[in-house]
Image (cartoon, rainbow, N blue to C red; front, top):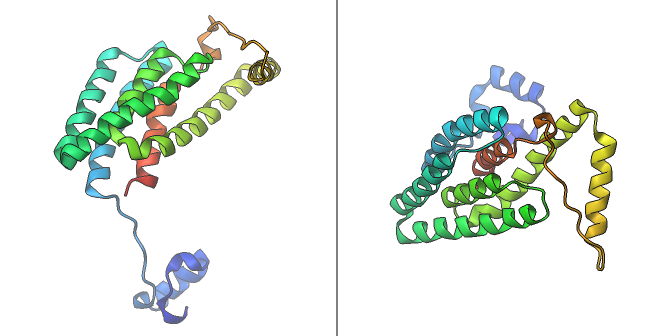
Length: 206
């Protein structure tokens, strides 16, 4: 391993062998979270546990959790970033609300999920809302796929997806679907939102 190149550029086996023979020649890169990101993660992890428990068991997210998250997000950002941090927090709340409300209009998201993501937006700030939204959608898609396969309603779900895509075309009405009475056929999207936020902060927070 010439020149002490970083370990990730080579195979794990080769790095291990070189490290055992001469540890000083293998500089290991350890990626650490910034202090601000660490504070946010310590705040979001217990929130995720509470939200996941209530959303999975009761399919609802208590409003006190949402309100506490919103207020805490604004206060944290103001304390850590001053006026700029406070404004970024408020902007994140507004932007997150708009993005999730669009999905709510199409019947893809519940009102509780909209409020929760808006509150999360106040924690992560405006600059992280878009990447977090992408991560949340991907996480929710994985949960949805698992739920579909477990419930055996793949064909019905694909038919509804097709109806929604057709509804996006000019002149075609957007279908509205009622919430299934069987909770197993619904997705605890609060879990996707909180887990997605934790992942996004770890990846994208400066």
